[in-house]
Amino acid sequence: MAQQARAVVTRAAIISGAAAVFQQRGYGSTSLADVCAEAGVTKGALYFHFDSKEALARAIIESQHELSSAIGRDLVASNMRGLNAMIVMTLEIADQLHNNPVVSAGVRLTIEAANFASPVDAPYLDWMKAAEVFLRRGQVEGDITETVEVCSAAHFLISGFTGVQVVSDVLTRREDIQQRLVEMWHMLLPGLVPTDRLADLLTLPERIRASRQAALGQH
Amino acid sequence: MAQQARAVVTRAAIISGAAAVFQQRGYGSTSLADVCAEAGVTKGALYFHFDSKEALARAIIESQHELSSAIGRDLVASNMRGLNAMIVMTLEIADQLHNNPVVSAGVRLTIEAANFASPVDAPYLDWMKAAEVFLRRGQVEGDITETVEVCSAAHFLISGFTGVQVVSDVLTRREDIQQRLVEMWHMLLPGLVPTDRLADLLTLPERIRASRQAALGQH
Image (cartoon, rainbow over all chains, first blue to last red):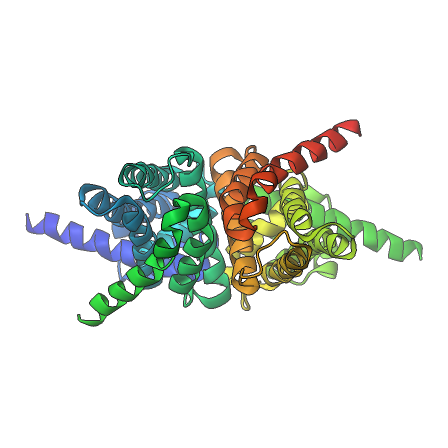
């Protein structure tokens, strides 16, 4: 049992060290020797847990995906209104991206993973599914127009979010990501919500952002 | 002069070969030996033109940027309506991405370039500037609502476009990029155009796409 516990700690140290190195250098420029140095483990210990660099990258993508999926899952299980949940999901994932090294490394690896043997599409597809749930819920609640085509709208929401975080990373190292997401929602709401509710709902992203910041500031 | 002409041909062969290898393997996993093999040149010839892998990657990004910028520049110089020009720009760049290996490699390298010594932000900034020109022109012409904040709208248009092409690449190798861009415009137009013109303009992206495909089919 002590040995098993040690293995869990070692694995976590490798994931954390590898995330830092991948984030700094990108997938291709990272060597397993760099990861060992950063994580403070031997090459033998690393190979005990991961048999290749791709296996290590996939483990980070999986960790990131678990962390991000948890946000969507909790919101789907909550009784939050669909539109609010959709906005909260984007802002929370953005927070993770900005503040959790395993998440930012995982997303970066996902985007670089076009050269993996099989493509990494699960995160996009899972986020799109969550977005579909929120949009349908919003239609039932009257916040989303009935005529919105849920599948293509969810597809673009996740694509738009992906682009905002990529561009925010390049231009500001994600310093402006929350503000840019509020602007994204400003652009999208007129096509999503009923005309007679637009004036009210147009301020919703900014209100959600402000209340989240206030809540985070209390900790 | 013959020597100079040969140098130009060799440089173009290196760029083209490197684009193919970068596109297939990503930046980090590409070796200069792979590039020499693909381009059919010696290592000496490669080093005569490019003193590092990063220099080579930057040259591809510059080539891609020239090709993409030409699209924006020609449209800015044309007398096309601003909104039409904005839509055409996204569809034409998408065509380049799907069909020109130097362009797709350049965009991929731009996204992977977070680990370069200095970030590659010029393509995003230039596209945003072109988008600002088109949105302002659209405001004068009455196709874009006066109250649209041009800078943040242009910022999101380019971010949204970036996300659409990244996700389309991961999920379909960009087979669905034109269709996804039409859907993006569908989502964005209600927030951009005057209410009384929406019904008419909502079909514009699909009409532009169809006429471009008809024109391309004639060649």
